Each structure stands twice: as C-alpha cells, then as structure tokens.
Image 1 (cartoon, rainbow, N blue to C red):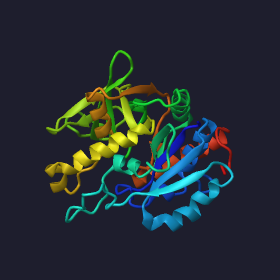
Image 2: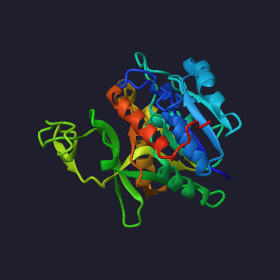
Image 3: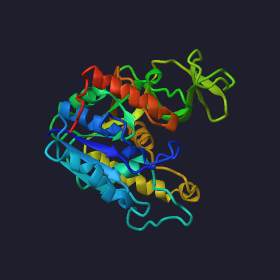
Amino acid sequence: MKPTLLLLAAGMGSRYGGLKQLDGVGPNGETIMDYSIYDAIQAGFGKIVFVIRKDFEEQFRTQILSKYEGHIPAELVFQSLDALPEGFSVPEGRQKPWGTNHAVLMAKDVIHEPFCVINCDDFYNRDCFRVIGKFLSELPEGAQNNYAMVGFRVGNTISENGTVARGVCSKDANGHLTTVVERTEIVRCAEDGSQQGDAAQPIRFKDEEGRWIELDANTPVSMNVWGFTPDYFDHSEAYFREFLSNPKNIENLKAEFFIPLMVNKLINDGTSTVSVLDTTSKWFGVTYAADRPDTVARIQQLVDEGVYPKTLF
C-alpha cells in the first residue's frame, strides 16, 4: 500500500497572528502545505488526510480541498476539545484542544496503512518526503512498532525572527531514537540569552532552570515529521486514557498530549523502535509574521529555478 500523509491543520498559529495554514505564499496563492502535498505525491504517497477544526470546514473545503481533486484522494477529520474517550469530560475552564497526538488520534478511523504526520505550516523541502516515503513504503505488510522520525539538523531549522520550538533528539548506535525533549525556546544568542537572532552567535536553548545551553548545529531535532503504522493509534488511545487520568493534566488547563510524549513512552517501555532518518532539507516557515516575506521570496526562488512548476495543481 502507498503511505498516507496526515497533515495537522487545526491550530490557529497564535505567534503568527492568523490562520497561517490558509495563507498564500506561492506565486499563485499556493499555501505551504500545497508544496508539502506536491512533494509527497512525487515521493509516492497515495492519500492525504487533514486534521482541522470543524468551524473552518467550509472555508477549507472551498479554498484548499477542491484543488486536489483529480490529483490525490483527500479526507477531512476534526479535532475538538470534547473528542475524548468514553468516561472522560472536558475540565471546567479548559479552552484549547489536547495537542498534536490528540490530533493524530482523530484519524484513527480513516487511516489503515503506514502514514506520515506533518505540520501544515512548515516548509520541509523535498528530501524530507523522499526519505520518509521510502521508509514507509518499504515496511513489510502488517509491520508494527517499527516507526521513524525525520531528524532535521537544528542549524537548518532556525528562524531569524525569534525563538522556535523543536524536539531535541538523541539516538543510539543503531540510529534509533532514545529520547526527544521538547524545547520551546531555541535561538541563536549569547550565553546570557542576549543578541537573539545574531547569525554570529551559537544555537542555544533555554532549559528548565532558565539557563541557555549550547546545541551543535548538526543535532537532530524533530520537526513533527513522523512515520507510523496503524497500531500507533491503539497505543495512543490507551495512553491518552492514562494522560487524562492524571490529576496534574486535568488541573493544568494547558496540558497537551504531544507526539513526543507518546513516542518517549513507547521507546522507554521497549514497545517500539523509532529510526532517526537524516535529511539535508532546510526548513523554513512562518512561525512569526516577520518570517513571511522571506518565505515568499524563497519559494519564488525555487519556482524560478524550476524546482516547482509555476502552478502546482
């Protein structure tokens, strides 16, 4: 079976200040995810599934989904705050959904083949889809618990306009992921956190104690490009119940069920292995509104160089 691409598009992009998933950045109004889907089709993916919020379904169908007709089968699933296992309810005062792995769970009933999960607001470049597509398409039929993550080199994923959040990864001698730690403030800066965005400064992240820790530019980081088989849904459903049963996660109205949280558990339990796939791709995106002009210019350059056609779909 050809793998499926699962696109997480339910967020509003709070730092960007708008619904950036629908923002046209290509020469004919193409979105970043249009380029991801184009690259995925070239890499052999056979279906796309979007996780969105129900309240912008009509706009999404009109502006986005219609353009893929005749190119690749596409489906929508919906993430909502109250999409919880039986016996659980939304804590009083909670306003936001439950994070990226909760979003993945929304696709359980429509994905029955190996699949790749990506963000919709990150421009991953073609090599990323080539390496994850190859891994998923070469899995034996019925494979389970043999997953993958595309490990971007952190130096290829920095914004010049502020801090970024990345899952900083460690791997063993076999190239399997051992840990992934979500770091929400990564930036080029001085040791005291000043001079942020200065290209002459090393890459650093802020740890739990507020210290700025240096990272080698080739350190693999997760950009939320994961390769799973359908058994991952069962693992996630079971662990989500544990997550919701923890009083700390109910009291914290912003607690999130992240993909790295689930992956770390499976690795630590010895249930699954996750191969870290290297890519030379250089990320860019619109984490901040100030990133947009550079993103538009870089896409135009790729079109001018013939990497992408002037009209994708």
